[in-house]
Image (cartoon, rainbow, N blue to C red; front, side, top):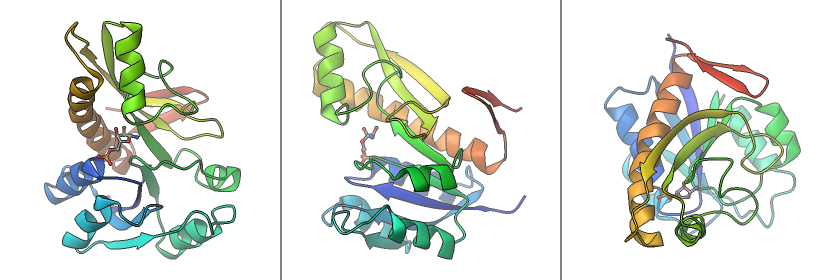
Length: 204
Ligand code: GRF
């Protein structure tokens, strides 16, 4: 099976990106990360890409009009899969429809809980701890026109202990994010994800 060409979009430290880089290097993922794009110039994830010799670009999203630069980059690199790995910008409807079911996001909660507008980063875990739920976790999903509402691909849960703080919970969930994001990209690269409406079937 030919390798899929992957683009990864980041805004921060890029630990999810690093998990994908490791997955490719360990031959778990039958794909190639062709480009890493950040909307934050200082994102450490750009350095992670640089160290691996992966093309990496800072795109000032203030200048971005309807993601035209992103679309051109994806077309030039013949991208098969776009992964949002902590990318803190809403994508245009044009980009979402062009790459429907080829655009994946990782979210640090069990969607549909603690997600949507303004739910990102530590804030998610602060709300989880404040609410007093007993389980949390991470979700991978396809991106559609609404925030964190696309078809769910994989989820994994963990217990929220009474003593957990937002920070301790964030650490536990981040490990799960890395695990299910690598598995999701692995499955996509093996054409083992079938989407029917909102429902996603993982083919054996
Ligand atoms: C992760 O918690 C991810 O779920 C969220 O943003 C964070 C990115 O972390 N979308 P990193 O940059 O991959 O370390």
